[in-house]
Image (cartoon, rainbow, N blue to C red; front, top):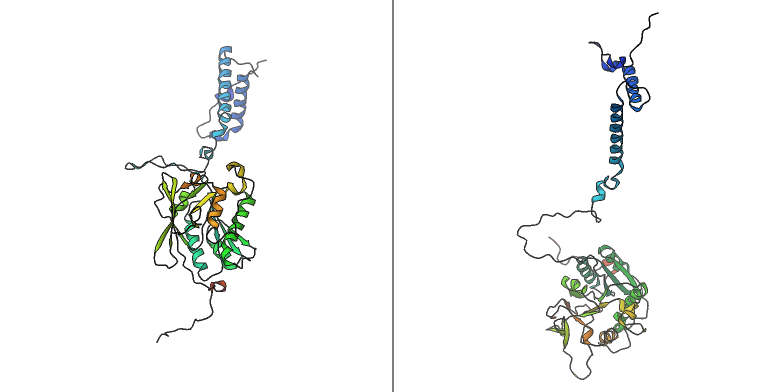
Length: 363
């Protein structure tokens, strides 16, 4: 009896007719592909030589190894964000061809400036605080503005601070300040206690709200290591001439003083309260500077005009521990004006309801 044997690869050798599509025969292509893979992997006896079967197996193995190696060998490069700098921005390496000036190195760890401002209710308070706020807003951070009022924190001052755009702390001095002579001293003392309690690390500067300051002053404050001082220009009590008070320097060293004092009862250091700044660690880390354990404070029991020099004597022993700013102390970086309307207070909420009638009415 005649037998008919079908060749194993007949399905592969078949070709579609002229009007037949390849997509119309999916059922025949899949078994053929599986049959070929089984033959390749040794599931069925192959009609080709063993050397060819070994070669195809090696080729398939190399392909699989390369495929999985490419997937898992570089996990750190799968996201372009991992190549970005830590600050999230890129620097353009292209520089101007005519740039000849050497670039100054930027210190990313700038010292904190702690600006202490005592203030009180008077007619020009809003003007002075707003002017100082605009000045401090131009100073590069970090900067902390500590504003101290007496008895209670007023809404008017709080509103100015909230709108200033400067990091601030609004404190209240609750001690008896009926004597205006010692009011500023006790307010500054309240700020020093706050700095000591919270161990704020930076450069402390007493900036009254009625003075005028240059931005260069705040830039140089960050260069102070322990205690820095500079000359201050001010108007005389008669307001008809300008006087100078502060250090005479040579190469950053204090070698003398500008003063207008006369007589034998002279201050030890001829420095205005706005003419010096110091490292805040002298308040809460005296061991670093080899100070006694007694707290450094502003005293309100000394005579008028001696509060500043008495405070400085607790920080430094003599002029050798001072740093003159700038090196030759030849620049005026702040002015003390003494311009106030005495016995006048600001209107509540900075608004007035009196004297609003027109003096010259429009026709």
